[in-house]
Length: 371
Image 1: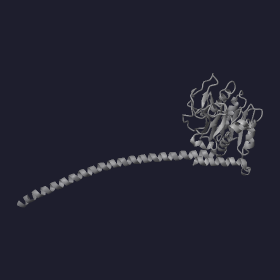
Image 2 (image 1 turned 135 degrees about the vertical axis):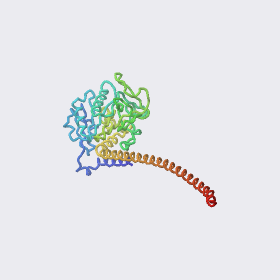
Image 3 (image 1 turned 120 degrees about the vertical axis):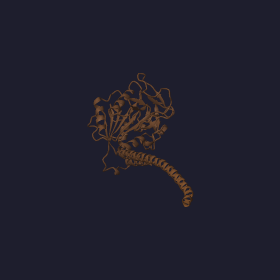
C-alpha cells in the first residue's frame, strides 16, 4: 500500500510540471548542478531547467562555494572535465552543507576507462568518503551485451532488481541509459562489498545491469575491489542511501544524468536515431521520480520509516511480554500439577485414616460394651 501511495504521489508531482498554477505561491526547491569544468550548461542540463519549472536551478560551472549552496535542497555533482579535480575546499563545502541535514547529494562517476574517465571515480569516492557514505564506485566498468545500445558499454540499465522499499522510484521506468558506467558498491567497516548479494543497512539498489552484466577492468594499474573479472551477473549502476538521523539522502551513480557522451536524461537530444527511435529509454522519468521523491516526499518517507520502526519496537515489546506470560503460565501449570498431586496424596491418606477409624470403631466398640 505504501509503495502504491508513493507512486501516486510521484505522478501528482510530475503533473505539476504541466500546471504551474499549482505552484505559483509555493517556494520552489533549489537544486544546484555542479558541472565542473563546463563552459556553459550542456543540452541535457538546459532541457532539465526548461522542463522542470517547479524547481529553481542553479548551475555552477567554475568553483563550488558555500554561497552557491545557500538554501539548496539538492546538489548534483558532475565532472564535465574529467581531468579536473574537486578541491579540498570544495569537498569541505559539500561536507558542511550536507551536515546541516535535510539534504540530497547526488554523486556521479564514470567507468575506469583511461586516461581520463577513470579520474572521475577517485573524485566521486573522495566526496562519498567526506560525507561518511556507505556507497563507493568500484575501480572497473560495467558492460551488458544483453541490454545495450549497439555496444555493450552503452548499458541500458534495468529497474527489475530495484529493492522493494524503493520500488516507487522506478514507477514507469523499464530501462535507462548509463553510457560506460562504473559499478556502484557498498563500503562497510572499511571494506568494499557487492550490493547484489549483500544487504547494507539503509542502502538500496535502484538500477542494475541484467543478469548478463560483465565487469571490465580497463585500467590495469588499479584492480577491482570486490567483483571478480570474468563472472557474469547483475551489477549495480545506481544506488541510494538514506541517513535517518539527519534526514539526508545520498545517490551514487556510475554515470551522470548530463554530458559525458550522453547522460541518462533525454539522451535522444544528442542522438535521436539511437535513443529516440531504436532504443528509447525512460531516463527522463527516472530522473523526475528521483527529484519528486527527494524534493517533495522525502520528509513523508522519513516520518513513515520512523513510524514503522516505532511499531516494530512495540511489536517486539509485546512479543517479549507474551513470551513472559507463556513462561508464567507454564510455571503455574507445573505448580498446579504439583498441588493436585499433593491434594490427591492427602485425600488418599484421609480415606485410609477413615477406614482405619471404622475398623478400630468396629473392634473397640464391642469390647467397651463387654466391660
